[in-house]
Amino acid sequence: MNKLTLNVYAYWTRSTINYFFDFNKRSVTTIAMEGMRSLEKPKVIFVLGGPGAGKGTQCSKIVERFKFEHLSAGDLLRAERAREGSEYGALIDEYIRNGKIVPVEVTCSLLENAMKKSSNNRFLVDGFPRNQDNLDGWNRQMSDKVDFQFVLFFDCPEDVCVARCLTRGQSGSGRLDDNIESLKKRIETYNNDSMPIIKYFEEMGKVEKIDAKYNADDIFTKVEKIFYKSGFQ
Ligand SMILES: Nc1ncnc2c1ncn2[C@@H]1O[C@H](COP(=O)(O)OP(=O)(O)OP(=O)(O)O)[C@@H](O)[C@H]1O
Ligand SMILES: Nc1ccn([C@H]2C[C@H](O)[C@@H](COP(=O)(O)O)O2)c(=O)n1
Image (cartoon, rainbow, N blue to C red):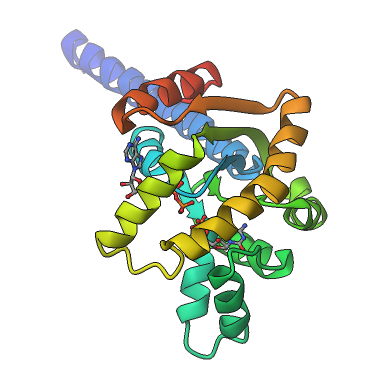
């Protein structure tokens, strides 16, 4: 074997060893990261605010920008109500028409099932917890299983909320509760039952409050800042 052949052979051997070493190093790191991620509890942000405050609108933007999954308690309940054979359909219907809050056992199970089905590890839980029963049920069933971050609170004047919901109803939302009678009850429920829950989280220093009367893009600029500050990219 001449000197050139030997050099080529040595170079090839070194490159091959380096390649496999690097490859293995990378794959071990990658596997470890994936393992750690799958062991991490899912991160949960509660999104609260009055009816029509713009929770759903902002959640869509957050999903697009920060890759969260949006779980709207109201949407899950409406889907369950519409599901053929649901044992809760009639009950949900009655609660929604009257602007009342469905018992937590139903809502929390829908949320937990949706989280289990998802491959995502970041969730926006929109419209929950809406009263003390919701909060107690969540603490019993879910709080140990998730990594709660904060409440994103869209603070919006009542007249703005009502106007937005009525416009949404007139534009064909198809929602049974986008009418003035249901809205009066929803706002009463919000003031009496949901506000104390927001205050409770506020006292814990866990509320990020946003003035929600402005246009959706300006509001989202403020939302983005909160997410960056909280370490989301
Ligand atoms: N910043 C905004 N300015 C004007 N209209 C808005 C704004 N944000 C949302 N809307 C409109 O107001 C209506 C209610 O918005 P959205 O559904 O996001 O509110 P929500 O808080 O999720 O309501 P709900 O609790 O009743 O489900 C929608 O028709 C939406 O297009
Ligand atoms: N935690 C929840 C959330 C919603 N509901 C019911 C009652 C609400 O009026 C209705 C619509 O909710 P929205 O889409 O406005 O968030 O759904 C409930 O009982 N419990």
